[in-house]
Length: 275
View 1 (cartoon, rainbow, N blue to C red):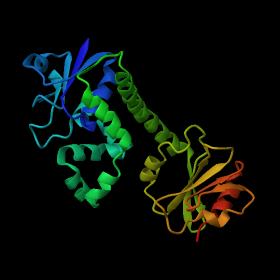
View 2: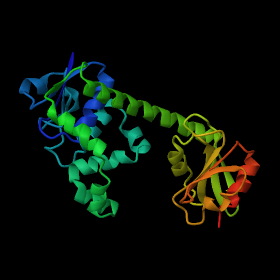
View 3: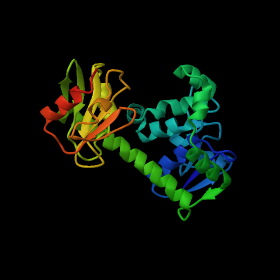
View 4: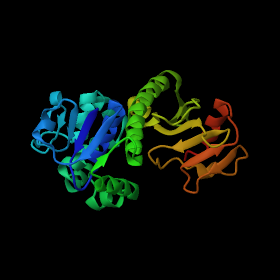
């Protein structure tokens, strides 16, 4: 039986995510929130996370506080498990999570070019509640509901990396870039999770003239037309009265058609929304 030791006291995303991905990977482990002993640090069946003042992946010790050049413990764990590079590509939140943990919100805000109040205002009460519950426990076993949630989170995140990588390759071979007046749109008819990895495909294309996506709607039988990057020349409110349109958001960034119109027809409809 493996053991995972994380620091006691207030819990943070770093130790929470580290434990979650380890639970998903190790299959079965006991979790303890306490200071590690020398025996813990030497035991290959014990993973010491974000505590212990030692980074030695060969001994499964993953602290970063003793070396300011190291990223957060979660990144160290992900590197050890072989998921780090893919996570850097797949998740926009992933690199900034380490910066928040290592440098704090003020330097992170400066790096992002925003006021620190923006980061505090965007903090999630869901995060706060779950981390507060993790802070209160001294140990977790497979019988605990929080253990099950953390393991499921880790499993889902690792699986999502694989799904996004696979979908990106599928988009490269199946999606189309179509002309919409003087601008462009990405068109994909992949039904399952239609917008999965679209942001990665757009980054791969690197074309600033792509201002909208056209994908199957996940609510109904038609297409979803979505404005990208809040482009000022796209406003779907212009086509709100078209009989082929079932819904347009009040802010004009999204529209849905009643049916899957042929590509030529939905492109013509989309072109009417471009100023």
